[in-house]
Every structure is written in structure tokens, then in C-alpha cells.
Length: 215
Image 1: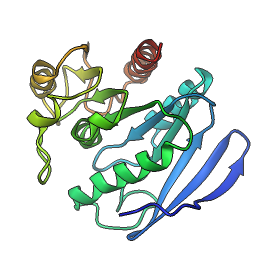
Image 2 (image 1 turned 90 degrees about the vertical axis):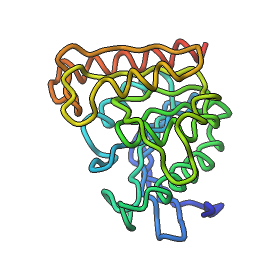
Image 3 (image 1 turned 120 degrees about the horizontal axis):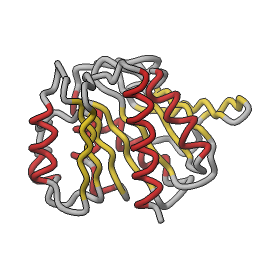
Image 4 (image 1 turned 180 degrees about the vertical axis):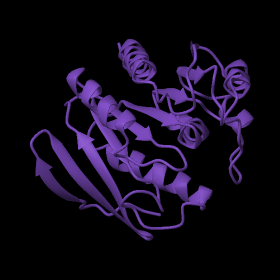
């Protein structure tokens, strides 16, 4: 898939609603215009770009001076397509990454669940990764173990009460990742960090880590 050179923008104060034209139709995205390096959010399998997690995270990264991009994978939110096409999701992520290079040479990934796996599988393109509750999963020809041989600095955040992806999977990924790497366990945290205190803590740790490795 290739990104058209002229995307469509609709200005909304400090936000831009972005539509990237693709062979599948359109990838719908929102940009928080913080003016600095780019942070791209990859949501999970059943999630979408406008979930509270990524709206709050976008606001915090914007305050910290980053440009934050949240988008809908195919078949999710406002992006058409087949949500079960996992290789296609990887192409969506790469397309958004390629477009984001117009904003900054420094690009960081933040992914949740399946989105965390995708962020790791293409992590050699990024300057750093935050992976939230990542499952240890291979997709198509892309293999997790191979990707972790060349990962950038990475922070893995996992709740020890995750009912969907056991924390042991996050720990396995951490063990395989090359340094620099960090692991943060959220005591009592579930897969979605549905407790507002847990979510605020996760966002705080995410912003702190990317600010640190951006120095």
C-alpha cells in the first residue's frame, strides 16, 4: 500500500483530522499538534483511535511538546476494511508511519495489546516503543523473536490482573528484548487499565519514558 502525497485535513483548533488515502479506502486519524517529535498510537484488536486511553494520552503528549497521531486500523472506528486482516493492519501502521515522517525525523510508537505486537514487529522503524499488555504473537512472515533482536529502547507496561493477555507474555517479551529496556507492572491492572487510577499511571509512565529517551 502507498500513501497518497496529498492527504486531507480539517483543522479543529489544536487538532487535525487526517484522512490518508489507501487502496482499502481511507485510514482515519487524529493529530494532536504538539510541534515536536511524533508519537504514533496503535490501538488493540477491538479498540479504536477515540478510546479514552488514547484521547487522554494525546492530550498529555501534546502538553509535553510532542505531535501525537492516533488512527483507526482497517475495520475499526472510521476506517473501512477487514479487521481480521492482520497483515493489512501492519500495512496500515507502516502507511501512517511513512506519512508521519513529514512532521519529524524522530518517531515513537505506543501500542496496546495487538497494537503493541505490531509496534514491536515494525519497531526497527521507531526511535522507541511503549508496549502495553503485549501478547507474544507472530503475524504473517514477521516474527516476534526476530523483531526483538533489533528493537529500539522499549518500555513494557503490563497489569498483573490482565484477564486477556497474561503478564507472563509481557515478561517473556521483556526477556527477549535487547537493552535498553524497562518493565513496569501495574498492581491490580486489568487488560484495558479500566481503573482510572491505573490508566493515569500508565499514561504518566508512557510520557515519562518517551521524554527520557528523546533527550
